[in-house]
Length: 79
Image (cartoon, rainbow, N blue to C red):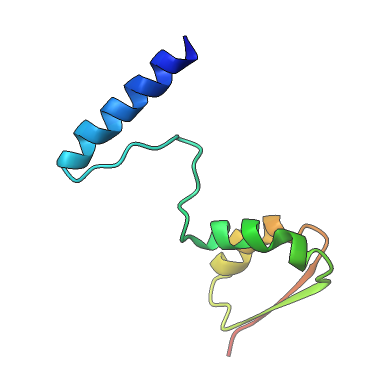
């Protein structure tokens, strides 16, 4: 029955695309998002020990990035 689910998904995506909509998994990450970028870079960036956020404002960027660098020390600077 997996082929039925796959086929229904393809049909639903096609129908929705006519209205300008897109069907995707609820847990999907937007491919051009900040999170997706860090997921792709994760193998390369494992050794980062310190992240410096210049212009930190309320620290929202650091909050979004922190899960990708769980062992890093964060330094936030706001002028």
